[in-house]
Structures are given as C-alpha cells and as structure tokens.
Amino acid sequence: MDLIKTYLKIILIVILTLILATLAIIASIIDRSGRIYNVLGKIWAKILLWIAGVRVKVIGLDNINPKENYVYVANHISGFDIPVVMASLPGQLRIVFKKELTKIPVFGWQLKIGPYILIDRENPTKAMESLEKAKKKIEKGVSVLLFAEGTRSLDGNIQPFKRGAFTLATRSGKKIVPLTIKGTYEILPKKKLRIRPGEVKLFIDPPIEHDGSTDKKSELELMEKVRNIIVKNYYGENESN
Image (cartoon, rainbow, N blue to C red):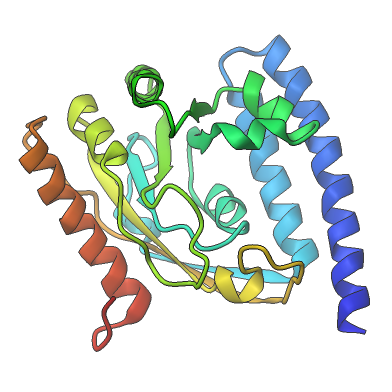
C-alpha cells in the first residue's frame, strides 16, 4: 500500500513539475526580471510539499529582513531541500544549481533559460564566471541560495563544505545566512524511490556580517563558522560530525 501511495505521489509531482516548468519557460521569455518565475517556483514548491505530505516548521524567520537580500548557505541531504527553502523564504530568490540538472527534459530546460545560476563544478574557470553572475544578480537586489556541500549527502550526514558560497559572500559584500534543513533525508534519501510524509525543520540563523576580505584564509574562516552553526542545528548540542 505504501508503495502504491509513493507511485501516486511521484506521478502527481511529475505532472505538477511539467505544468509549472512549462509555465516557467514562458515566464522566462516574457519577463526577464525573473519575478514571475520566482512566484511560479514558490507555487510549485508549496503544492509539491502538500502532495508529499511534508510539513515545514520554520525556526528563526524573524532573523531576516524581507527588504534585504542575502547569500543563503544550506546543507543538502535530499531532493526535497529545494522546495522546502523555496516555500519558506520571502523575497526574490535565485538558486545556484549544477549543470547536470539541465539534462532533465522540460524541468532542466526551464532551469537553463530561467534566472537561476548554472555552475560547472568540473571547470574552475566557468565556476568562477557563475559566481560573478550570481554577484551581479545580488547587486540587482535578489538573494542567492547555494548548497555548500555541492551535492546531496548519500547517508544523511553533513559533508565537507566548498568555498564557492563564501567567495560569493565576501565579494558581494552581502551578509551570509546559514540555513539548516533537517528531516528531508527521512522524506526522500538520495538514490531512493520512496517518499514518506513527515515534518521538516528549517533553521534560519541570524545573518553573519564580514569585513569583505577576499583572501583564502578569511573565506575558510567564514566557511568554518557557518558549517559549525549548521552542524550544531542539525545534530544538536551533544552531537557532532
């Protein structure tokens, strides 16, 4: 019975994604600002979570100012991380995503032509170009979301962070906001075709200011500070990874 429910949810999610992705393609053509795209993304995320039976408890929403834009940095443990964040954060949000996702029919196409930022992890030069593109978007008043681990965790544990998000934060001069996503691994682990309903917690910590130093040492210190916050939220006071 659980398997049948999972397949039904997957079918509904695929249909929802195809419809909203098609609308997103049209929106990207007629509205280059990305505002309509952003609204469609939030609608997609909220309906998807409802279909899957996922409830999101947001902790610390009052730590951010809806009128400001930030560099958000989150852990990444499940395909449900993106809808959880999209449905919960206010304002205009742009996500940095890996280029492999553009290979997915319709969904990948709308990512490619939409306002999100594609990153080629295997090409350092192009990766830096992507961060520069993200910096320009931030300068126009939008927030950017990066998953600091670069890819989803296979076992649900937090992986080592990469410097990209912190390079962007220091170069843009924007505050960095740690986001901790807890519970999505139980909903849908990586490489598993199973969706279980449940509650997910999204911790939004206070924005971290920095002095704008762009040297490697400063970026690594910022990275370690953010990772420690996320690890503490994810595992609790008495656990670490």
